Image (cartoon, rainbow, N blue to C red):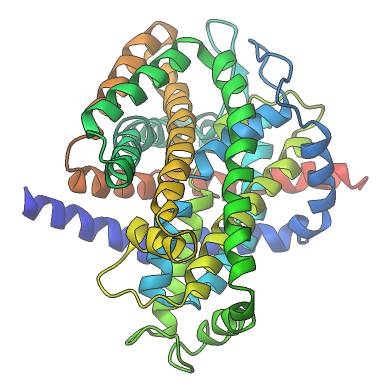
Length: 449
């Protein structure tokens, strides 16, 4: 089993470190240029549309979809996850403080990619046999590539996302919650797993309507809670912030240029880990969030596209960046610490014994919201493959994975989830590039051209 785990990890590292990163960054750069820096031009409009529709008690989602804010909340629920805590720490440890600069670069380009994803999800959305609005990459992949090839790519994507997010992904998210609570409070992981599975099952049974209602309340609350905690620590470390930003920009191009660099880190590593962790966190180009954006009730596809841009900004430039600033400004030398442990140590430095508890609570919010988002993304594809009547079967399988994942060692599952998370992006990115003229045409129509 250890051999197989090592093999899967090697395959996953290859996919994420080379071909996928080149394709993801290249696609982001391509759309940034073709759409004339739409992430800059339309950012203000996206903010107005998002927060203009802000509500903790929006109109209930129905068969005709959900509000734009509910759709973005569901997308952000999936985006803002453990990657914003553990992924950021991994980037800083492996790539040095300069990795945060490359996180920003990848996110900036990813904002153009996710615009294209949301526009295409809206353009090619349809209704299932139950009359429910549905959509996502599997639908626009078929529009991009006709015949057996298109059918194969769409099916491959659906199977990959069901495995990566719906099953294995939710297993490791549950494990992150139970592990954090066990470390902070000494609670048995099985008890935590039963509670998570029960609450998740209750939400699953309520369908899209209940899921949208929960995410529109959970996402703003969890974001504010974490942001306030980070800002308090940064206020306590305010004298270290000038040097923190200096490290980020200087070490992005010369990792050994000053004290604070991680020994042995090269510019290639800083770039690789920064780009990889940034894209893994905000999911731009991976093909997950379009499932939520497809359900938004908007007048024009580009209306949801500009709102999707803001979701990447919130995930990366706000939440993940605050984590990175706390880690770097704390001045911790990561000897034997990585991931969640390093983040807990950084917060404990300012919050004392409350630090690990604070991170445990945030992990609960982040990971549980991701469970809801990933469940929904997998459900759309499971339903497409096996029909509406298969949803209860899918829900039960996900609940079992959540329960088992909460108390099992999941090294292999993490590796498999990462691998399938990476490979599912390829058919999505190919479809985005093939349909780029559609995205450009829709974008120009919004500019009155």
